[in-house]
Image (cartoon, rainbow, N blue to C red):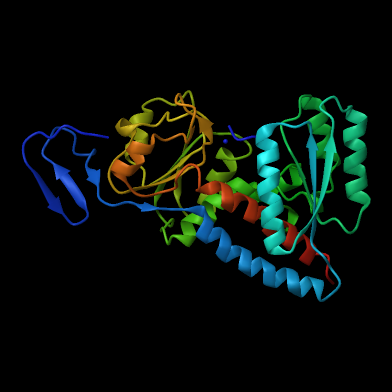
Amino acid sequence: MPRWQILSMPMYGKSFLKGDIMCMNNTDKNQTKAMTPVIMKGAPAAERLTEELKARSEKLRAQSVVPALAILRVGSDPSDMAYERGALKRAEKALVEIKSIVLPENASEQDILAEIEKINADDSIHGCLMFRPLKNKETEKRAAEMLDPKKDVDCMTLSSQAAVYTGNRECGFAPCTAEAVIELLKYYNIEIFGKNAVVLGRSQVIGKPAAMLLLEENATVTVCHSKTKDLEEICKKADIIVAAMGRAEMISEEYLSAGQTIIDVGINVGADGKMCGDVKGSAKEAFAAKYTPVPGGVGSMTSTILMKHVIEAAERTVV
């Protein structure tokens, strides 16, 4: 699991209410203020999916198959450990067994690859989550190449990456966070078909796969990054914004227009020392029709998707 890269407007003239939007008689018609946005909390969606997963896990156990996930952590990075604690809690609810493997910060490549080899050989383990990035990029690459694609539940291997870009889920799983974005949109009944979706960020673990999953749902997708020109205008035209740039509160009021859906994947520490997303909180409240909070949004859904992948991997072993 990659480490997470974790308004007031002056009134000119008269304002009037029309439906759910407060329109302002000023020079910028795009920046009208949304009324009473829906906060897309991750917990309700995660709990509903967990109940479904629990039933599937019970069915597997009745066939003497116990879904099991190996978590491989090198060192003691606080964000890795926090995610691991959340995964353990979610696994307990979904009836997934966890095997935690912790190696020291200075673990050699041989030590890491030896653990991957053991995971591959253990038929009782159905999925593997290795916290990334590793200090040595070449070691991380070799570990990804070595992992059995059938046990890759967070899109580490080339096989899983191919599954994302071809849409063939039988040869791998999408990154958990990218899939969590889609699941949240569906849980809150947000139409994706035909909508303009802007993905902010082009990482291999969130931005690019999220864009591909949105395309599968027939959205019209624009991927933006640090070199994108006219970013403000592109964002204003979006129906759905997925913010995954890993830059604290980079997106402010100037980037938004009324009625948008904002999925804020960013987990950052703001100037005040508090956790925040990539989109300024006051901007989401002012313009979004629906938005995910930070914390309390995408994160809890991500660990649930991880359990979903483990259970699916276990189901594939049943003849």
